[in-house]
Amino acid sequence: MKLGELMKQSSNIILTLDAGGTNLVFNAIDAQNNISADTVLPASSKTLDEFLQKLLSGFHTINQKTGNKANAISFCFPGPANYQNGIIGDLENLPFFKGGVALKPMLEREFKLPVYINNDGDLFTLGEAINGLLPLINTALKENGNTKQYRNLLGITLGTGTGGGIIINGELLIGDNSAGAEINRSNNFLNPEMSIEETLSIRGIKHLYCEASGIEPDLCPEPTEIFEIGTGQRKGNTEAAIKAWETFGVVLGQTLANAITLIDGLIVIGGGLSGAHSLFLPKAIEEMNGSFRKLNGETVQRLETFAYNFENPDCMRDFLQHDEVRIDVPYSNDNVSYSSIKKVGVGISRLGTSNAVAVGAFEFANKKISG
Image 1: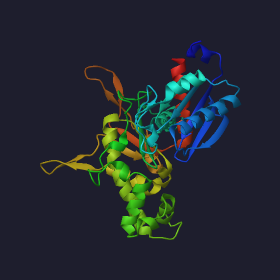
Image 2 (image 1 turned 90 degrees about the vertical axis):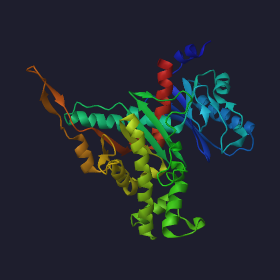
Image 3 (image 1 turned 120 degrees about the vertical axis):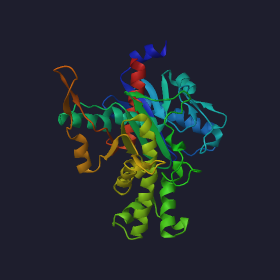
Image 4 (image 1 turned 180 degrees about the vertical axis):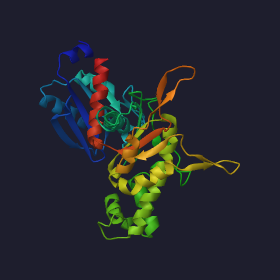
């Protein structure tokens, strides 16, 4: 029996996996984003066989808990990878993957279900586009009398590393080499010889704090503590903490400005470091709304659009303001609606990163199944 025929006989349940460095978290999710089964296995493995057996065991466990009613398997996994074919390449943290491992074909043979693998940045952005920031902003625009609606979304995750995803006209951008939206390979504003990941990550913010405070790396607090020091919730070098997060914001702002110039849409930020947005997002927006200097000494606006901070109530109010006017059509008695202000906005995940990834995984698989 073909995979498609098997799917039609089963209920609308997707098996997912959050493949973290510590744990492998398996879930069975339905269309309402309810988790009907879950299991957790330690990620640490000494051999490829040990790791693959954990994958098979975890998916078998949650599939059996649902009565073997799953429609598909859909999850995120670190790259580099050929995601379309489900082949994971040489992973830095899992050296036994060297030479490539065909996860998708293996799982499809084992479970007789379609398997879809993406990276976490892609699925995070898709989830926020389906049920998070993007529809929330579009609904708010309608409620304020605006006809403008957004269909493009740039997502960026800030945590152990830097991830990204892009939605164009409602569709997830995969890329010809499964390398679309690999924003972590952008060059670093502080040091063009480095990527942004050396700043926009856990190790990055710790390095910035150590540099600003003059302490040794082995004495550096964790990012949450650096945030609490910067906001006065914890004792420490407050000035250094604020400086570290603002420098973080400068690099983020420059990165987002470059990326959104090509995409022209809204921006959503997730990942563990996003919780410190009050200390870095204002600076990022300031950078995005900065200017370039021309050869003749004049300046030109950094972006053709204006960037707004959705976490600032005043900025959100300005973004949602109905500023459309009616202008006359030449040589006629007609007029049309026109807004001269081009706007983009940046906000923090409305679903939570893990939840957004789960929604994205479900939506990606469900669309493939239905289409």
